[in-house]
Structure formats: C-alpha cells, structure tokens
Image 1 (cartoon, rainbow, N blue to C red):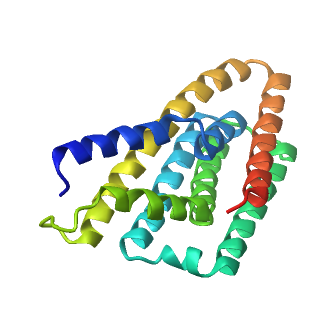
Image 2 (image 1 turned 30 degrees about the vertical axis):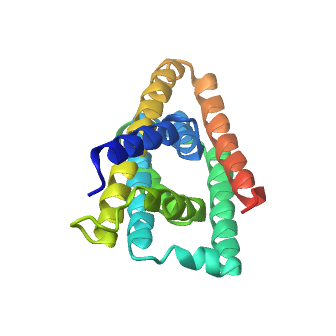
Amino acid sequence: MPPAEVLLAFLAAAAIYAYVPGPAMLYASAQTLARGRRAGLMAALGIHLGGYAHVIAASLGLSVLFEAVPPLYLAVKLAGAAYLVWLGLRMMFQREAVSGAVQEASGRRAFLQSVTVEVLNPKTAIFFLAFLPQFTDAAAAFPLWLQLLLLGTAVNLMFTSADLVCVGLAGAITRRLSRAGRLRAWAGRIGGTLLIGLGARLALQRG
C-alpha cells in the first residue's frame, strides 16, 4: 500500500469530499423526510451498495468507458436524471403512511430505488476514476487493481457515514412532523422536490 503520509492525505481528502453536502446526502434526507427514518436508512444502504458498482468498475478500468465514449456517459446521466425526477414526482403526489407493514414496504422500495439511482450516476464513476489513482503506488506489494478496490471501499464507507448523519438529522425532523398530519404531508412534498431538483441538476450539469 502507499506510504503512511499518502494514506493520511487520502483519508483527509476523502473526509472532506464525504462531509461536504452533496447529492447523496440530499437524496437520503429526502427519502427520510418523505417516508420516515427506516426508509432513509435503507436508502443510505442502497446508495452504499450501489457505490460498489463504481468502485469495482474503477478497479477494473471500466469507468474509462465514460470518458472514452461521451454518448454512453450522456445516456446514463440522462437515465439517472429522469429516474430521480420520476421518483420525486411519485413522492410528491403519493400519500403514504409511515408505520407498520407500509413502512417496511417503503424501506424495501427506498433500498431498491437507491441502488438504481447510484448505479445510474456516472458522476460517481468519474469521481472514483479521477480521485483514487492519485493515492496508488505502482511499487507497492499490492497490485494496482487491489489498491483501487481497497481505497474505493474506504471512500464508499466514509460517504455512507455522512449519509447516515443526514438520515439521523432528517429523522429527528420527521418524528416531530409525524405528530401533525398536515405537516407530514408537506414533508413528502419537500422530499419529492429535492429529488426533482437533484434530477434536474444531474441532467443540466456539464461533464
């Protein structure tokens, strides 16, 4: 593995990237606001597992395809953006309780949706492709692909820890809103609006 000072720089940089508010944090918060804490936790888990698709792709060099084939990058980006907007619209107009069996179903749905959202986010693939190689060492005992895999796993775990903090904060808000039915309905609209905004941001963002 890289020298200790390089690893420390890697951890510091990863922590900065992880805890600066970003789309994954907003997404997990939106799921929590609209569907409750369980759905938020399942969303964070889905984002985490979906992130491993990009970690593995980066370690195998597959993420280079997005840079080599711009139409592929654009197609995946637009598909991910459209999916986020669709989820946001459903969240805004679908009235859903947050207790009992319905809450459990919402958690499963949030998990599956979150895996899909993360896999369809080419920005994550490009991030890993650009960020991880800076901290590898060609002279290390571990092969390059394994270094990328280990570093990517560490980054993914750090990003998930930040998402969980946001879920906890949003969960505290939903507990208060659950005592007032009208406010609870507004939470779903706010969550849906956040997802639509994230979809629009992804679609319009250059590169």
